[in-house]
Length: 173
Image 1 (spheres, rainbow, N blue to C red):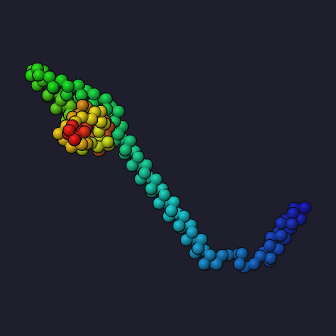
Image 2: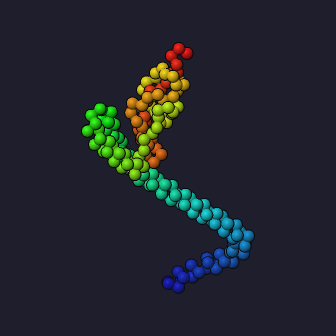
């Protein structure tokens, strides 16, 4: 009985070998070369895609790290605003202490890439300024003439827009 089963399987295999053509047995060198090129191209594209993904991920991570303290920095800016208001007072004793604290605080901010934006006397730039008033002045139209709240940037990215008054030009014109 076992021998009968073996013969059942062996016979169809012999028939298949006799019926199959030599073309199906092995592909030609040209076909192999073409298939190799296609697989190699797919591999190279996949490797390039992976490298682009790796670089993009690394860049995104670096940006997240650089701006991780942005919210904290924005909150600290309120403190420096209060210092600047106090510095405008005339009491010289308190003013001297505040000047030293202000210098220290500014240097700490600058070490962390946070710097103030210069506004007064420059053309209005909506990427850096928020216009809260438009007033007549001797300056040309569109020039920032007064700064109510200083703007700041962190690593060349604006984290707070300067609140400014923009010139309308001369009143008689």
